[in-house]
Amino acid sequence: MIDLRVARTDPDGFRAALARKGAADRFDLLLAADERWRALLPAVDELRSRQKLKGKPTPEQLAELNRVKDELRAAEERLAIAEAERDGLLARVPNPPHPSAPDGNTDDDAEEIRRWGDPAADGPEHTDVGRFEMERAARLSGARFGYLAGDTALVAMALYRFALDLAGRHGHTPLLPPVLVREEAMYGTGFFPTDRSNIYALEADDLYLTGTSEVALAGFHMSEILEELPLRYAAFSTCFRRESGAAGKDTRGMFRVHQFNKVELFVYCEPARSYEEHDRILSIEEEFVQALGLPYRVVNVAAGDLGDPASKKYDIEAWFPSQQRYREITSTSNTTDFQARRLGVRYRLPEKGVETAHTLNGTAVTDRCLLAILENFAGDVPEVLHAYGAPARVER
Image (cartoon, rainbow, N blue to C red; front, side, top):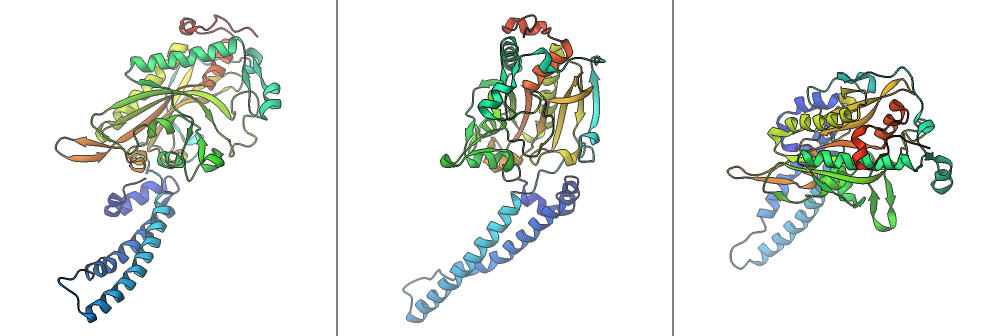
């Protein structure tokens, strides 16, 4: 969540920034609720102070104390209602975008940073090259599920292992995290309340299937005071998304499915270093995609297209010959103190006390990278993956 104390000191600056995410109205509602809450505080404090007496009270004083007690109970109820209203609105105000995020709210508004590689003029669709058992998966689980089979599965496993290996060389500790988490973890990372419709829920157990291991990585140190920074992690997990807002989009093949695998990068760092870390994560992602030889471009995502937690986000979009366009295969976001404040992740400074950390996340690889390989190389497998058990060529 945003730092409300800072927002009070610069409401105009926050409002202008949040307007770029379409959230200025939410911010104004929050400020109004916060003002109502603060207006009730003096009366509550004054009533609490009147409960303190020295010595044995007289009958008159006892009667006054009882009256004050009743008034205080009513005032505290009003304060609690105001606080709940304020906190509910605070949960819905996103992280303000960084000034360098371009204006706009669609993919077309993203700013292209650079390109690498030569896009192919044409190529097969991934389902014509790899082995994906879509019909069998549909009978088992429904639409938008698929089996990866044979050589296709081996290439996928090699991609995950290569991504973890590369992340390890850059100082990221590997983790295999839980994929079922409690509501406070979903709230803490900013997926709740706004993205609840895309999350699978196990209501009987009060648990949720994560759409990214970012949730587990952000929650790894929740409610802790860290003694050293930066801390860098990389996690492999299976991810689940309902894709409730993507009806009719990318229905062919394995491009947009309900279940997929992913290696996620995550960093806890000091605030002054978070944008430096953001560029570092992007460089790891580019190193990975370049090692595979995939043509791609890097874009700076528009402010209105950012998720609630993100202050700034870069996407790497690989070239997909069958679609004749670039499509996202990785992203990296700087969430500044937004997630850490919700999760209670702080760090200790020797001379300044305790402050809120910054967190960043980035995708090392998802199954979409496999699809890009199949389409760009028509079945040939990048040499870097051979050492991780991938065949030289995918056979169906």
